[in-house]
Image (cartoon, rainbow, N blue to C red; front, side):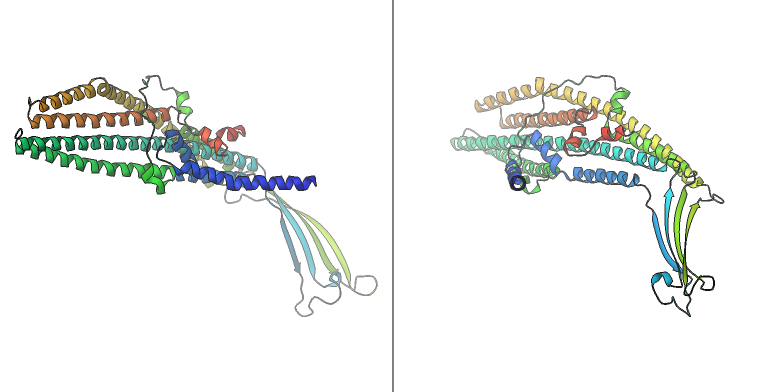
Length: 455
């Protein structure tokens, strides 16, 4: 009775997990009109196709580690011989058949620590795959932030374009009234209409840019069908002064791409030792049982006799013509190549960090100029021009010039915010602040720590 109740509880829990969990997932994914960066990163981790492919690579590496640790299986051989094609096998029970029958079992005994070296090589390759997953997550997270900021940029550009369209519509309406009253020339009204049409074209182009940005972000989070509803809701990142510190070797070695290259070099070293161990001869041990008929002339009594024998065999390869020179030389080349790749990855990581630091500092200085003076001065100049035009102090051309200047500076300012946000994300990713070790643990992938523990 107690077992039955446990089974019922288990079935109810299973049904709850099956039916309740997808409902929650759908409710969370139904509305992307206020998509935050944190929510986008959650969807990236769960649904990004590149991350799914990276997970399959780690799973394959785990399978290879399992295969590498398997000892060789024994071999069973069963056969008959001495079959006379004229007389056949004779009559009677099996033991009286006039054929020789044998059963043999052979077992390969590996020497030279071959199995241990295979396990060590596969373990390090599995660790490298886990680090590759971490680096893939880091890169995809950086790409996600870039796509998210591109969407923010497209939204701001569209807002500026629509505001500009609304301003020109009001200006054209006011100009037409003034034209009827004789306070303005028809040419000035035509100029305002031309700029109003240009503003509408700019708004349509901004809408197309917004659609492309939505599609780019939707692919990252696996929400292509909801692309047209996606809207970024987070503000632009605040200015964080990037400190120009020394890029140390410890900082470089903590990066997942560098750790993956280090694991592959260690794997190549174990593969080199495994190739050298091929010169240590393996031994094959066999045990055989033979059942054969005895010549009736030598058997006591009448009828055919039988005999049984046992045998033990040992096989050792003879290195008479080849001593595994090719395997050893190839493993040595692979080790040297892995060591050079590690040096290359370290150099690329250092260069990437230096470039990211330079980019974020330049973007910070550029954004400070827009926020500190350019944008404010442009607004003041545009407001003064609007006031002067309404009071007849300046002509329509001066008004249009001030509006174009303000719009250009506004677009440049949001572009500067986008550049700074991307540069900051790249700098943080280079420092490991967007790393993938946590994601590897959360998705059930054993990171490098577990694999390194076997070293």
